[in-house]
Length: 175
Image (cartoon, rainbow, N blue to C red; front, top):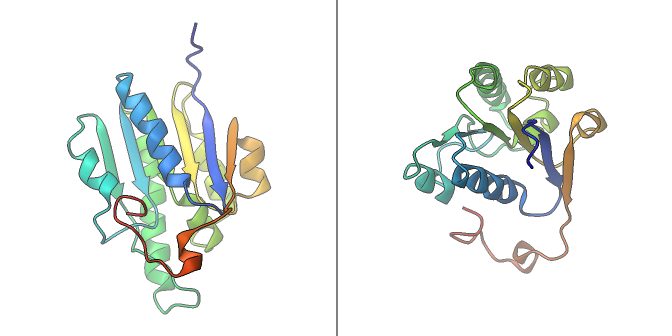
């Protein structure tokens, strides 16, 4: 018999597959009749395959809230910070709304790693989670405080990646 307790789940590590794992879990949950929301903290501007697919699935929503790729030392750091602040505010509202069975905060750990907000703000966000909600967070470099707070943590480890052989991102694999 299933225990209906919502979990805090983290997909982290330097390997590919963090968002893919979260979306796979979301598809599984959606198949069980659950309502899914994915808030993407970095992605913005590009049309990713998951965005196209979610538009065809009632009760499965993806929102791109970021400004796209962040470049180290880029001039647009303030723009990314403002977008992350808005995304955090939207996440707070949606996590507590009661509308969703699973909320995925895609790339939120990346946003934290780029200092777009403070670690305590992330921990405070997690503390808002209602007991029945599954909350999934993705991104490399999960801090110890997040790992300690989570119920399930999976670390993706890169063994081999086509980027290393000079291949560009592949449709259906990376986007």
